[in-house]
Amino acid sequence: MPEVTKEVLDLSAYKGVWVFLEQVGGEAAPVSWELLGVGRKLAQDLGVELGGALLGYGVEHLAQEAFAHGADIVYLMDDPILKNYRTDPYARGMINLIRKHRPEIVLMGATTLGRDLSGVVATELETGLTADCTMLEIDPEKKLLKQTRPAFGGNIMATILTKDRRPQMATVRPRVMPMPARISGRTGRLVKEELGVQEEDVLTKVLELVKEPGKAVYLDKAEIIVSGGRGLGEKANFALIEELAQALGGTVGASRAAVEAGWISADHQVGQTGTTVRPKIYFAIGISGAIQHLVGMQTSDVIVAINKDPDAAIFKVATYGIVGDLMKIVPALTREFKKRLGTTGA
Image (cartoon, rainbow, N blue to C red; front, top):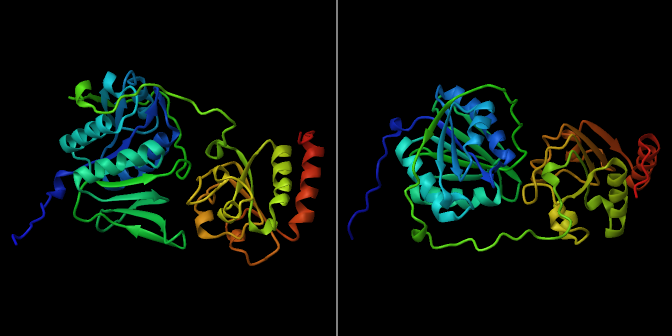
């Protein structure tokens, strides 16, 4: 059997940190700017430029926003074929950009689009991809990207290195990284590239865009979230969570245990296997604080935990902790908030 030899890359040929600037219909996904924030720190630690890869049609205006959020250079592919997202042309565009300009790090949002695109790109480039990272930093000695994410169902945090392949690729969920300050008037270099793909070469066609009706749950955009967990005891007690959320003008969240118990639908789930959130205020009621839940909400500005167990892990990340019977505490809080805010909860 012939010996298979693996290509040895010249790692020194790869320079720069890139962020894939995700957009839909010319509107940027906020995670793009969040990644430019962490990308700025990575680029500074490596002494390299921070770039953005911008693919779409009629999206050149977003380059200036990328500069305002920290990018030094934006690589633009503006083509009618890229108007609506399709895996093949977007993947081809990103792969061609990466092969030509050779960034050492590429970051993408762990959105539906980003997860689809990143896997195809990493596979074609035969490089590593770490999904759903919660921390990104540069190893000061090896100058490698340390990619940290929850593993084994959220029971441990694993740090992964891509030692021999390039680029080092990682995805990050929306709201995990803080939004960088926007610097109005900041400029950078715009590099325009050709896609080099014909419509007849693309097998998939977008026939119609359909918006699903119904009331959507936007946990990742909520500024106040009231979440309930297993400590509520039964489904009927979620009414306490809903009433408090209504009084505060907030959104209802839940732990994985509450969702798996069938007390509330999965679109309310916060955590590694749900939605990562960064609200101004997060109420964790009857939630013990398993690591898979903590990684999804611990960057909230203010965390209020209510639990009868004084040793619950949730208190380690809480700004304010209340130890006691939630069946008495939550209704009392709801009454007080209604009185002070003048709300009825209707």
